[in-house]
Length: 449
Image (cartoon, rainbow, N blue to C red; front, side):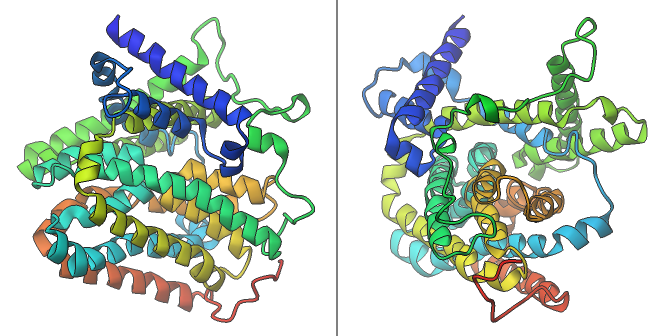
């Protein structure tokens, strides 16, 4: 019953966040998601603030992000028609190159600052450099999933700092993204959005008028036999179970995998389930929108509970090095969106760049949210390119295998060798983009194609 009551309290905060978003203009202008608003209110009411929330509630909230991240990653490939590599490369190759440079750049720039400034001046752990990519590109769920890995390599503060990094990242994604969009609108960088059109009022309030509402899911099985949501959740559970079986096998092979998180393997489990379902033509009974609703619900609860249970004493103890590395990460991502994007995309550079900015600092959902602001009807090819890019990108970065292995690699190689490796990968993908003819070093920023 305590767990049930803790969920009721969590839901109250989520509803409160939504009410505030719908009625307070500054929150609408900042485009803050309700889960983030709710998370900060809950944090203020928790043990580090007004102490209004009992400890037993916090204890029930704390494990939620670590559980829910597996659901989020398991759903990524479910209900998706997986095309051939050639089609993915033709449509999303340039987006993949840009995204990889942006993601690996988070490691490069963080390792550089950690090696030059943070370790000599503040004596921080060398894995401090991981919290930018884990928090920004990975998000709250990835940060929670990496907590045990950080602890296993002697960086016990890593999980909480990565959570705070994810919070800074998602705020950067939403607030920074909206600032960049407003600048782009004024300078006529957007293909289908102008000063005259602006951003619809209902998008700011987050309450959809009757004539613009849409269906969020489609039933694919008879209700008399099974609830469609139950069926889809069972498929997600199978994907997670496959990931757990893989992890158990890896742990049996080598003890190093005891520190490896489950969520990347849950994602692979989802991919396997989808491929098998396509082969046996079961996928025709899958509804992608239903999987998206499971993902979205899990992500809302994950973000709220993760922010609400952040240990602020760890953050305060590392305030200055954290501030420096966050400023570095934000500067890098703004550079990518404002400078690299117009030079790495020949078409729709702002739409493609802002989508990547949202994903690389927040989560995929925020990237798509920013895209829907500037391209609400998906008239550009950005959504397709981004979707194809994610199919290859997600298994490696932003919570994939490179993210999961990064603490081990940095521990084994050290800061400078790890930084060199990340730079080599960045240069490699830049050259791939160059030889494919996607680089334009003298772009026309206002050109609409």
